[in-house]
Length: 413
Image (cartoon, rainbow, N blue to C red; front, side):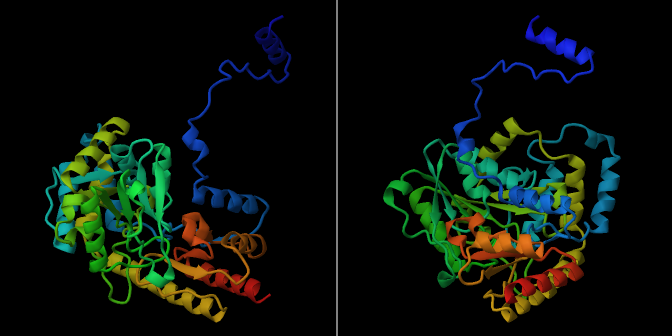
């Protein structure tokens, strides 16, 4: 009796069938996957889920996922759009012209930047998608990507997936968490294709000056590098601070592209909608990649995003007030516990030093195991993140207060 016959016979007798033979024993994933660390948030989710499965009451201050619902007028716009049969067909790969026009109108009203919706704007399935795909558009195997030594993991992860290298630009509290691009070796510069920056910064909450942006643009212009600015947190700011657009700077469109997300500003993380604007050549290249790898975002979601960008902005101001109140609570409490942290002027995070004698991973592990509180270790954001943790402000007030009490009990004990 052959193996398949035996398997069928066992199944017929009520026994579990044998697993099928390995017909393709030499199939292996691409080598670049071996170099790609587990996505930071996915790993933390797995640890949290294991505790939850054991019955523990876990409070997550880890992922920056807004706890408040999407504003009602945006949801209402989606309800109308989803019933429109014309939206049930394939979307325009680049995004509907009406959505791209709304993005450009928002850029003009918000930053005073004039853009062509046809050639200088592209719809994204969230800014994460755009950041990942810009590597495919510009990076060859063996090339270099310049990325902050503390930043969104996709900056370097996208390079790894292209069999390329990442050169991490040093960051520290001493230079206000501004990535230093002045000391990149000549051999790296010769192969550098992209420079990623993101201010307001995830995870540090740092903000950049116009002088810094001008220096970065000059650097990229001198070395033929595309500057990619991740501006996902432009609308979440405090203490009368208003984040700028890189595209406000003279000559920025010569060498730069900027990516925006509606996720944090309008509590739309699950909707997966954003946009890229800037250099027409970069927009065209990114659009070419997307034309071959995805079919665009559901047009009804784009219609809802139009309502977000062009409608009342009261909800954004209310969210900033909420996060500012939570920020003040977290900063005050951590400082009272002896944990050093700055007061961020933007984003939904507090960047805090861990207690002396502990690494980021050790402190994170202790908080999770003993206090059942999730934070993210700074080391997960890059080599200069060691010694810090990121605390998200997207947890309801009562749970945030309880989490801080648990952290205090752990630190003092």
